[in-house]
Length: 262
Image (tube, one colour):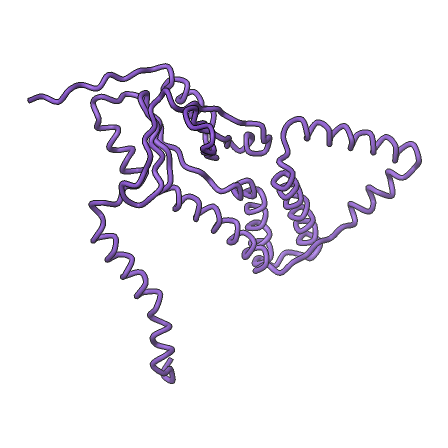
């Protein structure tokens, strides 16, 4: 660092400068910025609203969490310097988990598709066993040994975690607020949003993706009944069981707003 010129020093302090600029913008706009957490607190203080739900859209990359977990395990095993046999086995497990995640995301696999694939696998196993191909196939699978640099596993985990984190951050400013009387679709950092009355929209819950459901995720769709040309808004949300029950409670309630006192 003693031999750095002015350009290198500027590049070195650039992230700090960007962080300071972002902090300054936040303090200048903190009274106008509306995040989903602030909206949740605001609704909690509203005496006229007893039922509400704030949702945002997670990235579908969240289904790669099993791959992320196995990647971190493989990275730790590589750092610990375990034997090549153990690392090869872990690498094979990682490849299997990654391929399963990829197939589910690419083909939108649901319960029906899983059942079809299981029946196909059982049928293929019976066919190979009858022809004597099953034992060589099992030996081949057991002999697989996939290895990758530990930093490679870490990089893969960070890529998927970054996509998930970005969706969480984006969801701070792009979210939906459901109340008994209206739904508010927020789409900006300030007051930019669209409020639609309860008669002009409907909701549906989609838990057809088996891996999403096993991980506690599902989709809440908002349909616009008055303007059929307007595309529906779809949100991939966590804890879908509780949130679907909450939506049923909200849609069955009607809130009468009290007039302000003179």
